[in-house]
Length: 253
Image 1: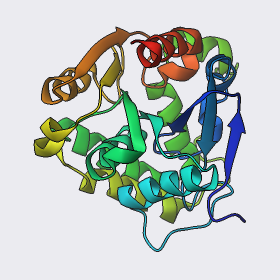
Image 2: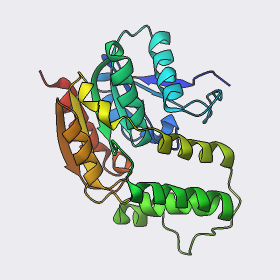
Image 3: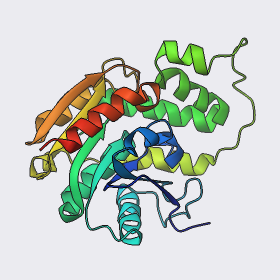
Image 4: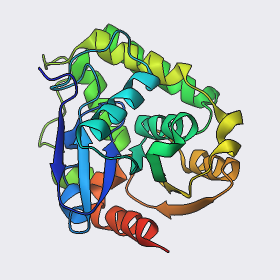
């Protein structure tokens, strides 16, 4: 197992894509070939997820350190940073604590400060994971995370899901990662961000409603806000739209 497993595709200015709570670089599979036409695209598995070795503790700074590790191994001084959902917290951390390593930032499906609904939803997700099981947790993530039409085409089966089915999942790691994102909050520091920042949110996002993206953009001085459709996992649902928004923003002079 590698300390931080990462993959590279394309040539040009470097972009690091940071996945959300699931933490797998494979989340970005539909987006990578589109961005790799113009950029060197780097994806990685978060520490303790997939093929990356576990950290001492699951924290947002430990994931940020993994990004810096990838940049160092690629001999890259600074890169564009794209973070989705939990990955947007990592991008915020990098922009605030390591501004010299960041060019522009893209905060996708993210938030500045978890409100009561947010905390209750993730508390319920953790309850479902630990008390009912990984299959029920995974089913809720898919049902709540994807646009309904996309779900019907790509994920729905002829019969209802088996919520008790055994599936491979490290329950302790996932639970600790839920705690990790609930513990992170630096909303009052976002006005210090020096980078140009693109904030993208989906109007039909059930998990992280769009108002979170609007609030995030309001707190960042040099921000641009874009609204899309596709549910929480809109980079997978509409990769062409997402890649176009990101490319246009990063190539803007």
